[in-house]
Image (tube, rainbow, N blue to C red; front, side, top):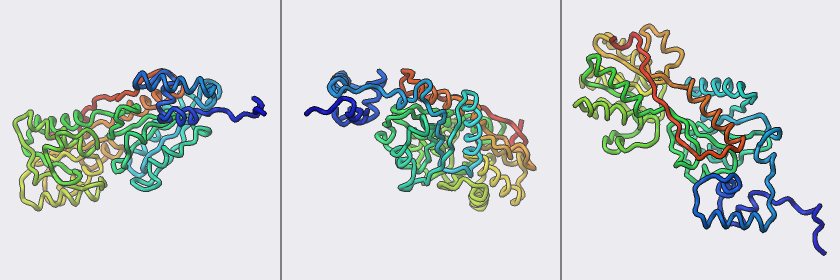
Length: 352
């Protein structure tokens, strides 16, 4: 006897994906009329949809009145000032659209990292995720092919399968180095590198804050007919704290290799560099100029106020929120990399 239609289990998007032999993301793209795929793949999925009698579950697609009213912001930590401010600005931006934000942290590079979050995302409590991807996460293209709205922020690549919202780190670093060169520095030190210095590899970098920022410094040096001395590239690996900045800068000073400008790859490293320079008797900015990144709140209130690159969080957070809400509404938009330029915020640690 045939099963009564009223008792039949509802066909899900996952059923469609499995029957068609495609990812959940691909099946979702066919339903939404979006994404890039072969004509044969799209035809096959459409045939399975018809065969199984799949009907769009409006609640599952987070449309109109059926949305939860929440989005998830996933960050590796709230300790770094940049990530804490990202969370605050994301909450503020979402509130403008009558949305609330779940802020969650994940254990970087572990079994409970970003991959686990993506795999276990619960669409019954949140309509989509803004993911600040850690630099140590081993994320693949396939991990980002998810069946829910996803926007990635930060300096990691998304391979074009998810929206990517990030300032242009290469351009910002070039501006930082260019400012020091334009105001009298000729031998730049860099504080905050990760791994051994390989200039050719760095010039090919496409992701990673440290790699992209160091790439920008190198490119600007080359444009000005200068070179970065590998002995003046201070490696801190994943430690971008004030203490790491002080220790590495002290090692550069102790090396005896002369330098008259420091590009620190975030403001905390720059604060540490200022401390080491002052302890060693260097006058800032008369003998050594220092510039950082991210414009954290403390930067303006130091004994020597810190020149820094604008973090552009006032652009990043609202842009990420607007993009995730467009996804939630089901707007047919292709994944994009959305970027913006930074600017130098001049203070007393550099010459004017």
